[in-house]
Length: 202
Image (cartoon, rainbow, N blue to C red; front, side, top):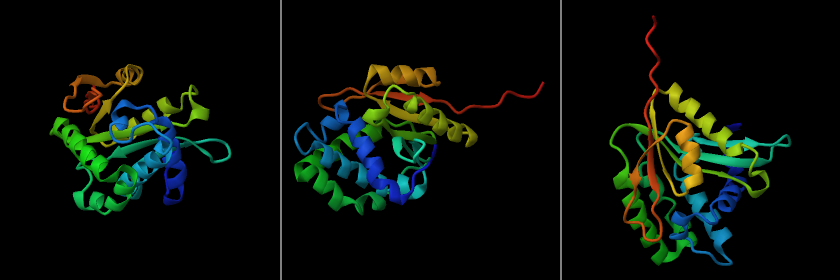
């Protein structure tokens, strides 16, 4: 497990594109089709370059040869300044087209409105490549990130679009806040993990 570097961008976006090819939320941004893998990779490249990658909040799981098996993308408390996202507008347009970018903006606003007002780390994405699924890579990435969250004394937040993933998050201390509305074709569930407070000394 290590922090992703700029040179890892292509491998990380490839892994995430594989992992989210059938995600119901992202299907509203990038529908299935022959260009879906390329467009998803462009979308993730824009999202990563806009903040998490330069901020050092992208974790990668690697194999013995250094190949990337999976990645977890976190946003630190305070979020990502809008001007950094705007710099990636050309890549967003290449990934989504004008109409798709407008739909994505509407969906992202709906997601942002649901976020709690308390300071928190947000788990934006965690995904594992096809070849490494079922090996516990996703669980290891989650545990690694939550250790950083706990060391920071912070809470954590995410949106989950599948029951299987929600079961993993529930086992790791998250609680469901409720299903999100305003996202045509999907109803992800918001989840919150309160900050861990050390027990007082006896």
